[in-house]
Image: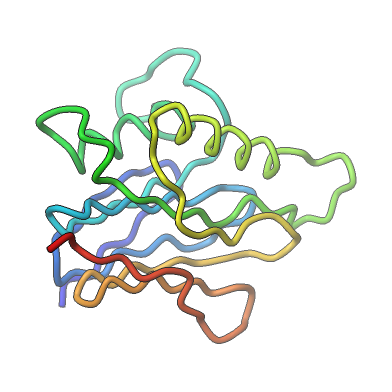
Length: 163
């Protein structure tokens, strides 16, 4: 089985049968996208809210708007068929437990707002709090696993192709 790691600021796609994983989700938000027609999945590991101020090629996807654009281009390359995309979110925590640290919350809010603008349904979330997370989407069975801190992973969502 092919395993794909998504590093901070990256967006990667995987085909059915692969496993795609984002580690170290602290204040970052991992957005999992799933195409219900093709059975393909993608993860955007988002660092910052909003849009990249400079649109730097190869680095844009650190920001919410740019990362979601890239995720959708990977999952729906022929046009805006967002009705076939389902999403899940994980991360956005205040892992350093700083009372004035609002980056995680800003990331969560930015991602939710942008997905809503695009008409994309969020089917599951594990966000906020002070817990680091890891997510892993197994495209052989559609299960999205979420690891919270050192706990045993739980199934956050199960994605299925339309029949």
